[in-house]
Image 1 (cartoon, one colour):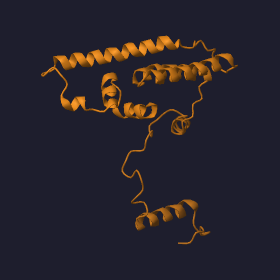
Image 2 (image 1 turned 90 degrees about the horizontal axis):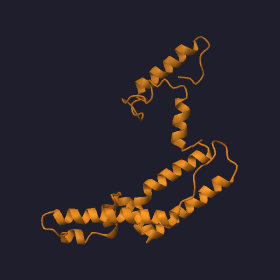
Image 3 (image 1 turned 90 degrees about the vertical axis):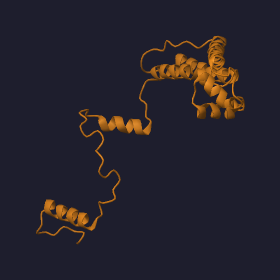
Image 4 (image 1 turned 180 degrees about the horizontal axis):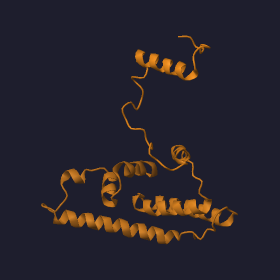
Length: 181
């Protein structure tokens, strides 16, 4: 078939003819997503494609003050997963520097009411949560048959023990143990 549309043929019939010829040759047989539903086909949101593009590209249009609140919530959620006191101090010192930067600058959006953290109070909170997790683990080991940990538990790597004590994912605990030494 020629690449140009014949003058005697309408655009619709010429395009339909090319599609049918390609289908007959099997050019549509191995397309990705074949036989699967089209995502968001019934979405009534007019801006669905903008939202999906922003999510896919990691674009965040929140004002700095609201983004800071999200970062504070995330840091507090991740506090139990931090492996040692130095990591807690470094993480929250960096967060405090960011809080001060946002609070001192002129920003769009609502004003920031986030105060810097008391590092010593955060470390004490981390220690208490860590000790509670260790006590819970020891209590569970004491009430289990045999009482003491099995040799295989005693030979577990340190990051596995930390992950078990804090309830953190093993991979995250290993990565933090390796990175923070």
